[in-house]
Image (tube, rainbow, N blue to C red; front, side):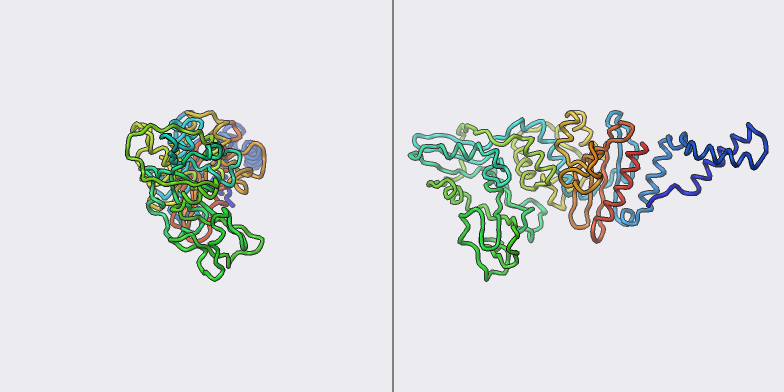
Length: 439
């Protein structure tokens, strides 16, 4: 799609021609033959090793890409071992980052959340156990059956003990700022809560729903997939073989927990007293990070973001010069520049071993949201990066391994285009392959 231009070839040929002429004199035919031979052998190697050559080529690629150049875009490439920019275009302009926001959540979470999340807090008063959530999204999550320590702890409580749920006094609102209100029925936007259960979603199939607590809430005559303010669903549009994730209102968490545990669960107002709460260990944080990054899980990102906000952070620990309102990137209020996103990636590179980073990020052509892009299943992958997409937005930021053995940080952000992002991804893949091969 992108080719070396005739002007570049002629520039190389002219310089080679002059060099050979100085050596062999003015025999034109011989000079031309020798110059062409040297051009084919060298491919202007000296010129193409010049960083300015690559910058000019990348500029040309971006400008000649119809899909990229007709959007608002920024692109930044740097060497984290030298803290030296390699290429930049509109790197300080602000863009909607979509799910690349999860990179910021990861960078902030790693230093403060430890190896394991606090899964549940509890306190005991005589014959009553009071519990409250800590934001850990593992409890009965259908894809985290291996990490049900909190559920096992609850099941083992003696039957003669009164169990009482206390909402957390700092519970987040059900939706973040700037989230689309009409996405309430889609699985990618579950409600936030301090005691997520079942991933705050139902699994809806033709005529059935899980968890079974909601089994009497299916109404085939109902047109909406789910009523906005109620936990009632319709299965009219589902095919018999399909399964669909649909969020539920978290207002029924006490009753849902009681039904799941098959025991009475009381409810108390948020605890405003300064009681001491003990903690039940929850899910390993790397398990959370991998699902957040590889599967772009929005609920996990928001729950981690809420947990981070409960920990006092120094100003130096917070990313500067951004507008950030959530942890997942669902909001269009978020604004980040390619340079700031690259700075976060550089910080991560300096603080964590690369083999850990590679396990947390989708690998091009191999895993997560990059399984079908930026690679062909080759081992090892050359791109480890996080995608970010919504209507009119496509971003990709992460790490690129070159054939010369370098690890580079890159951040590409594109906003304000119409239609599919597929063509943009195709064009960007050509550009990243050029960087891999030439830089």
